[in-house]
Length: 116
Length: 116
DNA sequence: AACTACTGCTTGCATTTGCAAGCACTTTGC
DNA sequence: GCAAAGTGCTTGCAAATGCAAGCAGTAGTT
Image (cartoon, rainbow over all chains, first blue to last red; front, side, top):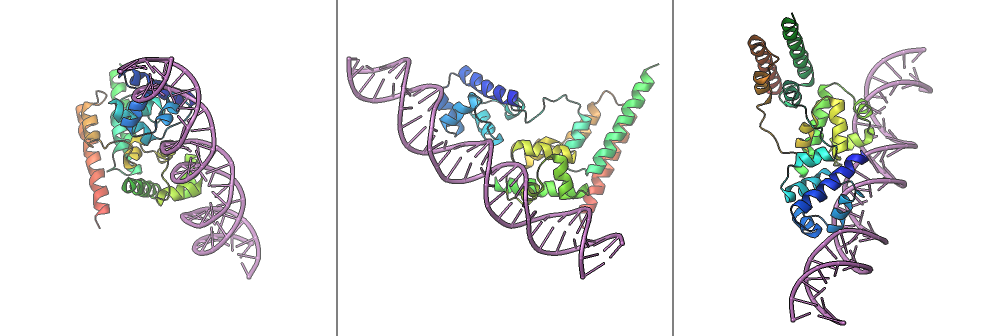
C-alpha cells in the first residue's frame, strides 16, 4: 500500500509538471493547502479520496486514474456482465449471486460446445 | 455531502440486513471494529475509501457502488447489466435472451417487494 | 433465577489528516 | 546590489478517523 501511496504522489507531481504548474497554483486550484500538496507529492501523507478528487479536477484528469494509483480502485479487467451485476442497485445480494451462477454455467456450457 | 454520507450508511445497513448479517459479523468480515461500523451506518462518521472498500468486499458488492453513494465517484447511468449481456461474446443468443429475462424478473420482484 | 451468547451502541483515546504561520532559498525587476 | 515576488518545505495544532474496552438489552439454556 505504501508503494501505491508513493505512486500517487509521484504521479501527481509528474502531471503537475507536465501542466507547467507550480505547487502553489495547483494547490490553489484544487482548494487545498500548498504544504499539504507538497507532503502528498513526497509521500509523507496519504490523502483522502476527497482530496484526490479535488486534485484530479484541478489537473483535468479522471478521478478514477488517481484512485487507481492510490489503490482505491482496481485497474479493471472489463469482465462486463459480472461487474454489471454486482454494480446493479436493482438487484439484491442473493439475486446477484444467482444471476452470476447462471451466467457462469452458460459460459461453461458454451465453451464445452466449442471444445470438440 | 452530508446527504451522501447518510446515504452510504443507510445503504450499508440495508445491504447488511438483506444479507441477514449482524453488525458484528459484517465488521469482522470487513476487518473493522463493530462500533465503528455502527457509527458509519448511523452517519456519525465518514469512513475513508479504504474502509468502504473493505465493507464492499465483505458485502460482495462493487466498491464503485459505495464510492458513488459516498460521493467519491459520479454515478454512471445504469444501463449496465443488459448491455453487458448483449455485448458478451461468451454467450449465445438464446442464453442472452434467457439471462435478460431472468434479470428482468429479478428486478421486477425487487421493486414489487419494495412497493408496499 | 443465574448464566451465556448475541446484539448494537457509548466513550475515551491514539493516530492520522489537513491546515495556518512561517522559513529558507531562488528568481525577477529596478 | 537590494527588495519584492515566487518557490517548496517545516512545524505545531485542531479536527477527524478508527479502535478497544465496556455497557445495556435481548434471547436461550440450565
